[in-house]
Amino acid sequence: MAATLMDGKALAQTVRAEVARDVAALGVPVGLATVLVGEDPASAIYVRMKREACAEAGIESIHHELPASTPEADMLALVEDLNADPRVTGILTQLPLPEQIDEDHVINAIDPMKDVDGFHPANAGFLFQGRPTLVAATPSGVMEILRAYDVELEGARAVVIGRSNIVGKPMALLLLAEHATVTIAHSRTRDLAEVAREADVLVAAVGRADTVTAAMVKPGATVIDVGINRVDGKVRGDAADDVREVAGLLTPVPGGVGPMTIAALLRNTVRAARYQSGELAFPLA
Ligand code: NAD
Image (cartoon, rainbow, N blue to C red; front, side, top):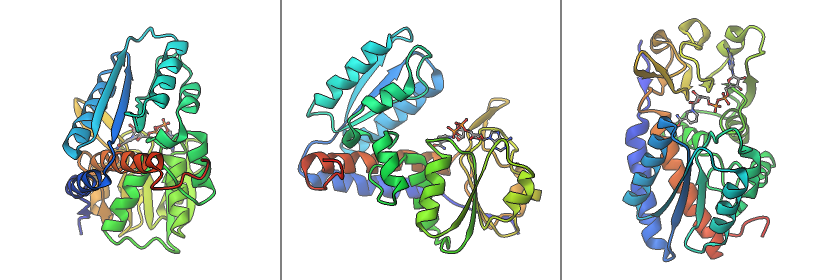
């Protein structure tokens, strides 16, 4: 039987409406600063979508565009200004950055309370400790999809393919926090197919089309396809087409994880504003 597709687009609309209500009820201004460096077309599209989502939710969007040649010192100076600006309650620096700018230096410079991407070591560390603060948007959005479709996680076998700091690792920690038995697979994993086939919940975050094929999926498993790959002018995920014939639930690409990433970013932006207003206590403050 063909998999049921998990409609991230519809769910994201519901979340975005909820965020708009939260913003209106908050009583303090919410402002997201976005910083785009250089002219990478995919990055420009992502930033535009995030800004549009902010506008729709009543969040002020404060946008900065810098040339690709920007020295690291200028980028860090801008982050310091944004940290100090009370209008700015959230900061997002779109990755990747040009090679002369060390991404870690920039991430570490962002005030952890304004770190809506959840990439700062303080926020990553709180997630590691099991007391999440601002959590990376993509894995957060995935958890919201899993909840919306009542996917049982307690005691389930979960396999995450990919170990990046922004998707794979936080994804694994969030699944662990819901009491799944979690395996992280990666480029050096031996016999990926055998590992993947054990999963009740399989998350693919690799960035290569057709990484996950039907033969790697346990019949009836939930498959979350995080991958975004451009193949012959089309956007495709990491899962091959035949995965639909085996999975029980599957996120489509596009229309699955992508829209929920933006929705989760908006949730983080509201949470960051609550930290700054004092409504929520930030553990480091
Ligand atoms: P990344 O390149 O940092 O990490 C990829 C991971 O895949 C690595 O940990 C690597 O070990 C693993 N890998 C590579 N080849 C492999 C193989 N043959 N077998 C098993 N594992 C392998 O990428 P990332 O930033 O984590 O993103 C992963 C994918 O998710 C990309 O396609 C990216 O575009 C997409 N993404 C989507 C969203 C969204 O909103 N939908 C958000 C972020 C990233």
